[in-house]
Image (cartoon, rainbow over all chains, first blue to last red; front, top):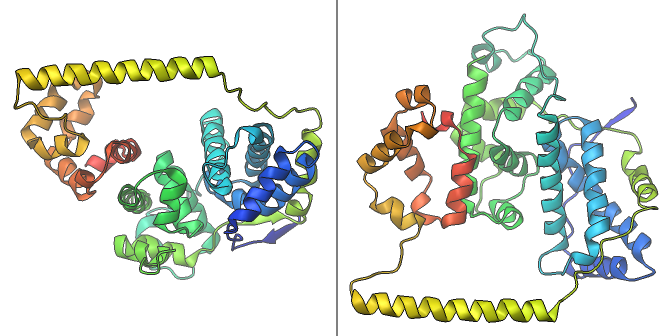
Length: 196
Length: 164
């Protein structure tokens, strides 16, 4: 497929009034489609990368992202502005990702490593010529082994570069618990790779 | 954003220089088909043509009143029982939360509990469990400063491997 590379997801909008306008538009009788389109255009990229951290492949991410927005479309009248719209979207996307993973039991992730590479953990750091795509494949596999909650925290903290305060707000968990989860996730990635 | 918070790579470096080194060498796999985001909204909107948004939840005043009445009744009942128990036992204190329970638990108590509930655990797992290490690991996570929800989150995120 034709591809482009994207490394930096756009930051979430901080404009609370813009969020409220979108919600009001969607909840009105005539502005639903326009509001929904605006909402998708505003958040699709950010949510895409959030989901991609869970399900790895573009095809699966596309499916989960569509399901997420369909749920938003159907449930917008039940959104009460008691939390930020972005927080609500993030939670739906997270739940949809976890549901997808349970449904597919991660069988869709083909991360098999070449047999020729043995004792990987000892050579990865020392060998500066090793293919970065291969290292990424190993990292993907190590991350895929993490328990769901540790993987959520790892992806949000490392790949999405969210602060603990932001993650805490999105997941409703204290920063202390998140830091501990991140710590365990990193240690587990290290142990996994060194055991290869 | 907390400006005093290290960036994720610096934080990872402190936890594991090995992992940080690998992460720094590899841009994340972020390939997307051309025009994917440009066309995405149209594709989703096409799927919503036959969908109806869920209705606004009805506010059933009768049910809400019933709940409120029941809640008041329970509060009064609870206060009455508490007053009665406090009166009969002045030394009675409020129930401790998870953090307080952890603070009061001896390692031996935890070990005894694990052994007594071994039917729920895999025997081979129990046999190799380094209980002292496991408990230290939990305490390092500042569990005594967390509320019940946080403690649940952390404990759910742990696996057997984390306890060795």
